[in-house]
Figure 1 (cartoon, rainbow, N blue to C red):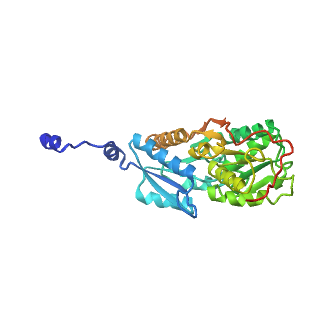
Figure 2: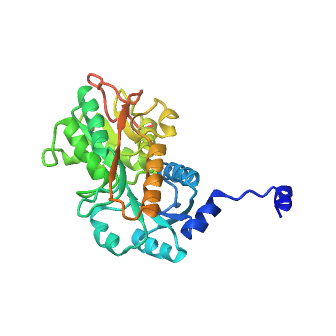
Figure 3: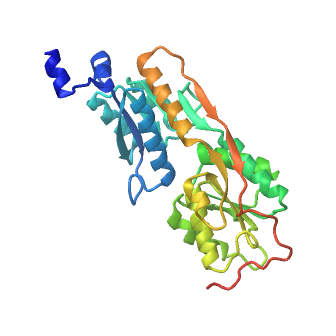
Length: 311
């Protein structure tokens, strides 16, 4: 038998060993489905890839499920006998009842729930918003727009908005709501932001825009530049994530850097801990962020002319 094994070059895999010990080595990731494609969002695609690599290193296999109803999909995953589930794209007020009824080990990425203890990994989103807002304020910008997906009082975007307000020295009541624009975080929405920007009377448009995703910021830059707005002379732009596109646009994008490979690795380690040590206490991991200063943000030009003729 050993001779046959040697001749055939058989090597017992780590996942197979894990399967014999745990009964299953499958981990499901359930995340929001977008209209165009399950992974049209570049940030999400990178995060999924990094999570797969991290779980593979730990002897687990990743199953992806993009769904309109994340919690219904997670319940369906139980029929696959998954060892654990990672939920991404949930809001704080959605999870309390679900966690109480979902028996499989579970962790969350980017959830700000506080009603019940949750095993969660997040980036320091409030700090990131603060870094963007305070930098634009230090450059002398007074009319600063916040461009982001629709948000409420909780979640990633709301947390970044709170930090942004801290950074510019404002609060929700004092902030000029004309400078708040809600739009999907994809490149193609840049045109909609451009139309909104040009709807302001001359001299009243924002001198800077903080976009909560690099893909959206890149689309905004393209739309504004094609309509005759100079970046950063007429309008500064800051993004969030520090994706590869940040250095592929011209000028390169000033952005808040978050470490997606580290976030994926921490998430993988946490779900494995939940699986192999089911009595462990839930913990929240907050990862640091930093501001990458590049060419898309600068001091507002004296007397700069907004709404230059569209080309």
